[in-house]
Length: 118
Image 1: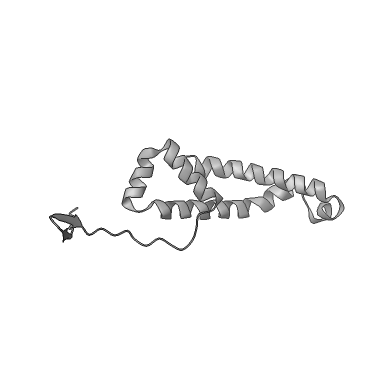
Image 2: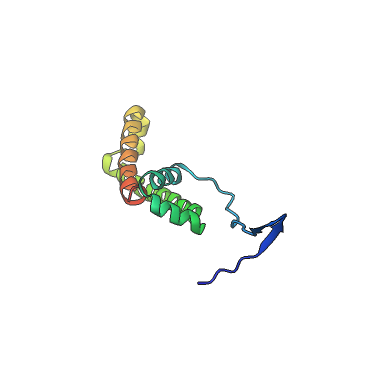
């Protein structure tokens, strides 16, 4: 692999003409930021490799999208299994909220194990 660089002369020095690829206008959410923190603290080699290749932001967005998709697909099944129905929501809203929070926590633990902290 051969990289050809161009240079600009500034005074007595030649400075390489380097430019970063433009990043998407999206911002990172909860899961992307958690993955970023994990990579920085526990996987510095992978973090540096992704950063230097310019693929870090794309990797974080992909992780964010996958985590949100997993959350959206797993929550209805977990809620149904836990008994958090619309009837319960109408008659005992506090219990329904507790069950839904429990389900979300369980799904997030799966997301953390499979997508964030691997």
